[in-house]
Length: 188
Image (tube, rainbow, N blue to C red; front, side, top):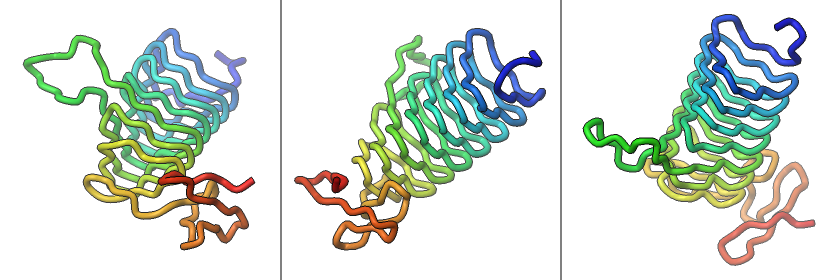
């Protein structure tokens, strides 16, 4: 289709009933399944898999080999590093299939998920959170939290720009934050 306003490499498969936003680029060997929705200005690197009915917001970047299964929703401006994998069944067994009953996962606005991280289903990754490379997320991640390890644990706080905050919750970019209970809030 010459008049479409997005790019799909000829080696990729886009099933019927998929919505792809303007200026999105889908590179080599990707597969996007039926019912998926991909926002404007997104980039899907080589060999990305998007499951059926997955929702991906505007401005999202997925590096090579990212696996996003049915039951995952990703908001705007999320970064997924190479080989990030999501799951959608808590107790998978080949002999006892779940017959379409998948556990939901939500990745909030502006979050970053580092290379080779695994996201166990049923959790929320908070707005502007930062999941370190190789982490295994087994519980919710707070807004602006930095987590790392297996299983992942919070090791600090990050700014909207992605830099780690200092001990006074200030960033070199000029933004500052305050703790309210165990949650971080951006100063106005």
